[in-house]
Length: 449
Ligand SMILES: [Zn+2]
Image 1 (cartoon, rainbow, N blue to C red):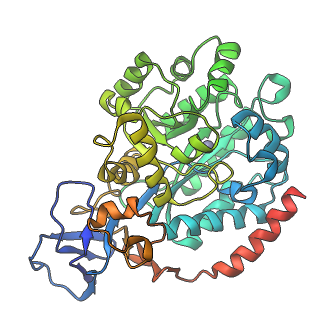
Image 2 (image 1 turned 90 degrees about the horizontal axis):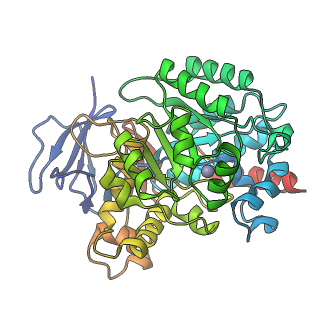
Image 3 (image 1 turned 60 degrees about the vertical axis):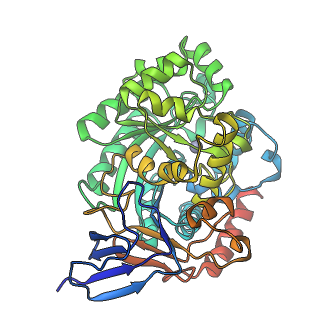
């Protein structure tokens, strides 16, 4: 007998659309089967009632760019004040010492942080496969399953070593054959298709300055043949633009097009340094952009032209980016910073809390090709984040949705993924976060010693 639950009368609800669900939602198993308008009762039979009158309800947040392993190198003194290229060059040798155990702990910590911030679906961009780490994505899959979240894990890659003019050291790069073979294996083993998918795989050569043209082009062909998505870093810094001009004789978007990536199968992390013509071409192709405001401020990379990209036709989502350039994995912090950074660019009237929450939910869903998550609507997955405005920081606030970002909500009270509670009263079900932190801290210390 399927169980139905009415999540009744939330204090406020953001649906990411125009629907009236102020009376709450009815869910059955993993799906929303009814939206209840203000002051109405459900038409569906209800087995269980969950009173939400002191909770602000959002669709589960979706993180579209991250590097989980970087939780081990947060706030590391040698790179605290460096921009992207020197930051990377200092960190590559440290990251090359990663072990499966360290990665597993790093993933658990990143996922726990994300989940507690109201995130129900995340991507990760893992591109480090030194000797002994060939099964890195398999380690990540186990971690995601333990946390009970949805994920799109991107099989990253680096193939252009320092000796060939790239940025990463030789021992951190793989050959094209190794990369493509493992990509195929991962898609076959883990990629779920269709509504309600919990685990998906995408292909993600790291960046123009760390992979060959061949692996970009071959990844695009494989993604098309297997019908999976494509992801990479692009137009993050002017150093990268200069690298592309010198190495390939073209700007970043020309390079992207030349390797078959300018399409709606692709979403890009950062997307800052575009000219008007490039914005129009990205928009016409429907290429998605993941805005990572904290990382962009941390490394002083620049500001993503979000509104121009949206006008041109590109979907915009949000990502926390790696924990060595943020250094948090908190989607609510990220949304707050997106609001403020984008206001500096476009003014207060154009960048509203609702717009930014839309990027963190429905916008992010479209970057990863999902129509079953990212909003509260009939037939969508029951993925929700609930916040309680009972802390000092919210005292005296009036509009609950605005208060989440303006007063700085950072921890969800409850989180539901696919109809299952994963966070209750601020605690992740079945996870001892104190024990996890103790093991993670030890491994993090060993890595930089
Ligand atoms: Zn990144």
